[in-house]
Length: 202
Image (cartoon, rainbow, N blue to C red; front, side):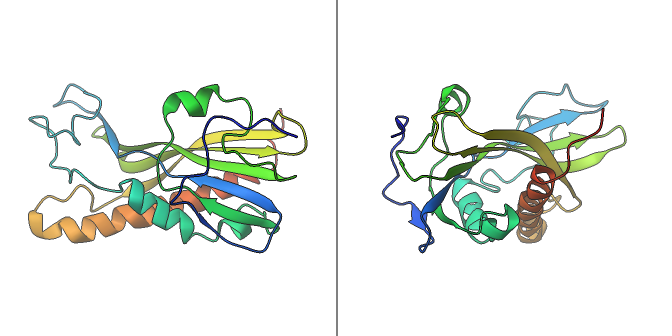
């Protein structure tokens, strides 16, 4: 029997029934930002905290609740090739210390097959030099069998270009937020593609 970590299944967790295996999914915290350019000092989270000289950015863009909704709607069993797994969707983000320092299963589950998908970081990158604006998401995935240690661990950043976000005018905000949600969904698919890509030849 596996010893579970200190995080219990949250009361608000939702599941897809009909399988013995479990995929536990956690959304991330609120949007962060990083800027590279000639006119600002590159303060981390300068845009999302409303620092002078940074583009106006909606304070609650792609929040934890929206991330959970988009993950729930993403057909993760097929994307991650875990058709026998039921999805256990957690409503709250995990603390960074739990993500990085828990070597065993995070949720208190003793199912014979168990996996975790965690949104570790959500960041808007704004680069004036050439690249433009992107929504970058750091996903972490772990898969367990009967042993306490995972049989597979994989994490990577994925990104989707933003054109309308952040909005320049208040009347553009709704369309810009819709683009942000679409970019998050695209990043889920991009991570699944990276997860199943063949290893690079050395």
